[in-house]
Amino acid sequence: MSRLESDPPQPGGAVSGHPLAAVSGQGSERSPRWVMHLDMDAFFASVEQLTRPTLRGRPVLVGGSGGRGVVAGASYEARVFGAGSAMPMHQARRLIGPTGVVIPPRGSVYSVVSKRVFAIVRDEVPVIETLSFDEAFGEPAELAGATVDEARDFAERLRSRIRGEVGLAASVGLGSGKQLAKIASGMAKPDRVMVIPPSGQLAFLHSLPVRKLWGIGPVSGDRLARLGIATIGDLAAMSPVEVASVLGGTVGPALHRLAHGIDDRPVAERASAKQISAESTFAEDIVELDALRPAIRKAATDAHRRLRADGRGARTVVLKLKRSDMSILTRSATTATATTDFDDLERTAQRLALDPRSIGAIRLVGVSFSGLTAVQQYALFDDVGGEDVSDVQTTHHDTADGVTDTGDGVAVPVQVDAADAAPTEPRADGVAVAPADQTTDASSALPRFAPGGSSMPAGRFGPGADVTHPDHGHGWVQGSGHGVVTVRFETRTSGPGRTRTFAVDDPDLRPADPLDSLEWDLPDRD
Image (tube, rainbow, N blue to C red; front, side):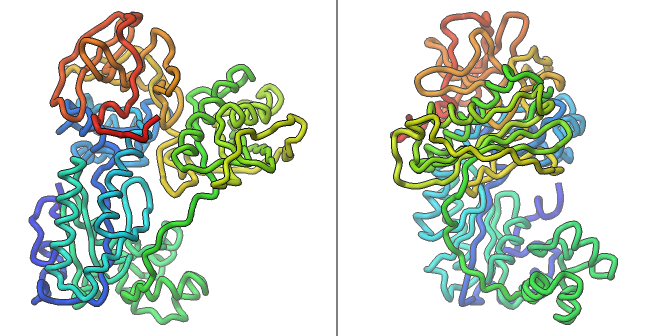
């Protein structure tokens, strides 16, 4: 564990050995503006540990276990071994060894927990700018002109509410602008507060690597490194003309201002999504139309779930097909009216399908809804012939599969692979994980409970799936294969549960809504 993770924070949020530690009078120093950045700690993995108490204290990896699987989230116990988000799952599993637990993502649970967290934040800070499921900016009105101590007390109060009402840890950074607040929250992790006083912000900022500056990516970072620009202070020492010549006339001046600690960007609610989508990458390429149909339905189901949560209807349906050569084909259909009706939307997506035997093997399938409006009609296409179907478009896309943006401003894992009811590898501690060569698709990769019926194949229970039994309550599958399924029965409030083994066709063992693992009163749930 690094010093930043282990050392207690110094007054004003400084860390021992850091330039802020040398700044005197921090606690009583005032700032005309305080911007807060809140970041939930190891959010996906922490939610799994919250709802599945047996996982607490264990190295947990959230993501797909297959050859194309990507880590969507790693617990701090897993990070000790060097595992982290966006890492190939096979690499993370090698780093951790047999003690690691791989859990497929449960997007519906993360979404509900995220909403509860941000409801608490909004109660304290009415206007927040959400960046993802687990982080947001805020500019608390009550902190205008407040001292460092008052800012820190505010953050601690907010963190205490989140821990008490949700059960999760959050890290908070505060500074005079977004840049400083975000850097501070990262340095406060895990589960702490860091406040950057105005008198110490330049010493703090200029000591950091230039890649810490918002907007400096690998390409621009390498370009600056070749010029000997290693720290933010080095960049600040350059003239505006020099920065513009290296980083461009538009981006350069903005980054130069940030390097000088000048950041007056407002905290503002994000605009409504223009598109809501879901997509899945497959362990084996799809080569038959009959295999493409269920993949389209799966993507449409996931996108529709997000559409319903958004509350608007869609006019346009887009089908995205990525072929094995990484080229992308898209087709879309648009109408004058909008709908939330799943049957209409899914039927339209199916009409847009192209036969893999004609276009080539397919490795990724996506469905997106756009033309979003609050005015929702019941029928998308009263007349099949009335669809406006676009021509096929071919582009090339060389981005690695992994976590993607749903189009609604919330990044969720939708391209990772996950085990599909495969025989599992037993572990000494009784927690089984799927072998690396057994994979299917996506963020909701395990068969998932859906109102009005289950999508879980009869007699098949994938590792990580939520299930229920009339005698034992809610649980989750730890392993399955050879005609049996092992379930650990536990929820957020139960404490570590016991495992029981059933025949895979036991009629009393049924798929369950993952949200039941939270044991929260959710009146708006379908």
